[in-house]
Image (cartoon, rainbow, N blue to C red):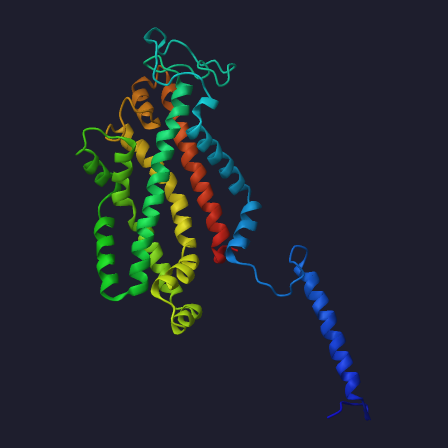
Length: 330
């Protein structure tokens, strides 16, 4: 029925022209609101990962932690770029006698010598390798294994969930460092891989619990139900629909836990249960320097500072990733 305005009738063609004009103007406004970089598409939603990456690039915490981690990884892979001195060769005549010479940056004399006459700077550079390898290997393994256990338990439920959850509770009830000490004392030779294995045995439970809770929430979503109704297999649903949406909390926990594993390796080496000579580790140097705290405090403080900086870098990275991926913190 034609629209009545003040007692007169308006042609329906006129009304159609007004509606079309308003829709055209609304589309232009929406395109302007989308801003540059939207490709001119109206209402195109951004994914969680693209939003997270945009936030991370603007976060100074992420930038600072990334720079530190890249520096540590470079030091781990190419220690010869930072020093030409040997971390093992020493001269007992110069033990503790030569003070640090801060003017000779990156030279063997820069930070002085330890009790065996070995360059402290060279020990710091080469000691990063053991700590970073242990942290990365343990984190990658517990993320894969714990994530798989949690995903299977959360998706299938029933007796599978009960069995895997009770298994997780058994390992979670063992004190982390105490259990690692018990495992490591059964080995006469404790290499980087042995220490990593001991930490893996007891470190996967937290990832499993986080993944299980995330999968239980995700599997109730409409798109998962629709995939089941269309006849998608279990493997396809887990890999294509559940895993990409449930992995964000796991990444947050794993990034923060990496620094904890590095700290655990240093603690075990300090106690004499982890790595031992001739291995090079910050924990070993801290243990060797504790008896000379009053005479040569730099021998103890410098490797301790490196452990603290490394752990802090990964904790900062974990906090930045959490702030970017957690919608509640936006």
